[in-house]
Image (cartoon, rainbow, N blue to C red):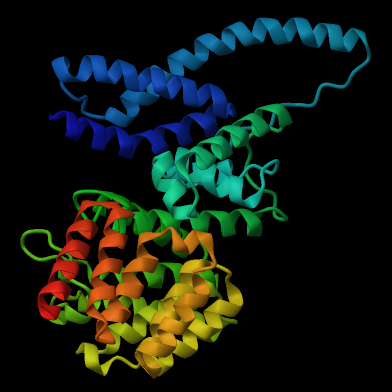
Length: 413
């Protein structure tokens, strides 16, 4: 197996192993350290001895030995502390019993990572890092913040958990809605990184998008009546259905309006629409259902010019009331331009430029370039395309943006 193959395997297995260890030993910090030692042992042994038949079990076994050694040391220390505490009259609470072992370890780890001592943003960031397998740089781009800022946020989250002395445990019935909300957002961000990779040579990372869909299916099977779980799964299916049409044979990015829609996965679209339709009649619509509805409108148009942009605009206006995500505002501006003309869309972009999170993001400049190009302002469009290209870490997107810039300059010339 090549080094790249080992890295892909470890990245896939690490959240599962960490989930199993955390659930079994109730010690996130110790489990994380033990996992790192197990991965180091695998990096040393597997290239020469070959990958074990069950690499996940191998990693769990090696990490468990490390944790067991640590626990033996801790037991002696705790025994001494307990004896001292009992002599002083303190009450020692019982250890929480272990839960069943039939759940998906990655999903369990996501729920465990939503620690009650953390803020919502910190929980999402930490869960993406330890359970989602995303790098700090990828998480920073998802949050539209600098990488050092995100690194500090994740480090503080781990320190907060350690200082709280609150063990990792399953959520109580009162905590479950909030933790589920975090897990859904984490799955959403993992899928987005898989569908449009924020860095690297390839636009898709199918390992991430497929894993997000797999976990969303598990949640949907367990909570079939939860409309936002249904909405998220429908959104993923409807979006992922376009994957085969998004790139040319050489990996070049193809924008939505130029895609060969016969390559869209109609079976996946039908499944997504069916799930969404059931969710919409079961309760009030949430953000994931609205986004899925937007994806469904796109999916129903057999040609780009048949897209019902007024309906998409109405859905984005509804979504804006539910979310303060700047990307929603950016997509709303695109919908305005498509429904009412490029100038109203450009006017909205001018107002959005005051948001630093957007102004420094490549997609803001790419959208502005596209609208300027549609308006015939080709010199300005080329400049914006080149500006966007300097702000993305995705090679596929950079090549696409530079090609559009060159095309605009050629037409103008």
